[in-house]
Amino acid sequence: MEILLEIIMIPAVLAIIKIVVIVLLFAMPLGTFLTLMERKWSAMIQDRVGPNRANIGNFTGHGIMHLAADGLKSIFKEDTMPKGADGFLYLIAPFFGLIAAVATFAIIPIAGPIGDFTFQVTDIEPGLLFIFAITSLSVYGAVLAGTSSNSKFALLGGTRASAQMISYEVFMGLALMGIFMVYGTTRVSGIVDGQNEYWFGSLIPMWGVFTQPLGFVLFFTALVAETKRAPFDAPEGESEIVAGYFLEYSGMRWSAFMLAEYVALVGVASLITTLFFGGYHIPGYTFGKVLHSGW
Figure 1 (tube, rainbow, N blue to C red):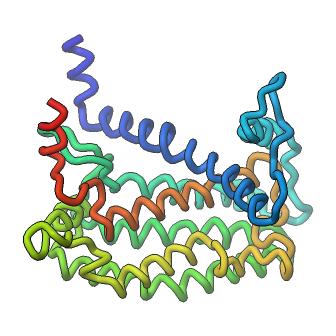
Figure 2 (figure 1 turned 90 degrees about the vertical axis):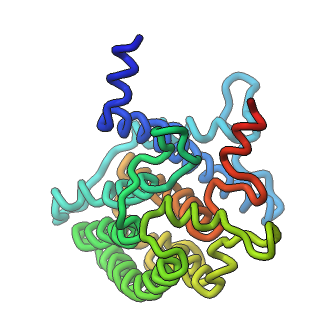
């Protein structure tokens, strides 16, 4: 047992375990679940039932079995490639967005440290620069998919994605600059700790949303644009360019684009909570107080 604990506490092994827990047991399942929630929410708005036909026996789970059904359908669906497409770029494009969405969770602290153990994959000093860089990476998947598909509609979608990224990256960086100036560090854990201070005794926490309200609005808007959600869904404009940059994809590669989009939504929510809403801190309570109350 002691040997096993020593192996687990090796930094590289510990980082792998954290990645598996945070990404495979939290981000991926939640991103997959969001696809069903969006379909059910759309159905409720439009006064219809929504997905509820997939079942095992008499169990439908209010549509939850559609997650398994859609996954199986994608696995067994033919993976086509358009004539004249650039084979290598066409095949790797779907994974750029997925890698970028997953990598976002590497610097997000999900809880306070216990001794030398931290609930964070890596706590690098230029954390804000990492956020800026990794959110820019996702657009390469859209651009490569658009340019390699040999389709005019896909090319337009990739061009739109590139133009949109260039437009919104600038003030996203300015919003992060405001956070750096307030808390005096680019380390994400340091920013979270800085938000555990209070104004007027213990009345108002020094959250980023209060210290940088304009920065919060700009950062939120930029991240919505980065994830290509309405009203910033021009790269996927169904009414204009059919489906956008992933028009020619099918099977698991199409599913990779979809999964990347919804995992990115989880990452966006986590980033906003971490940088502007105190992270894992509860107003009036420190992580130590919570542990002490548990004991």
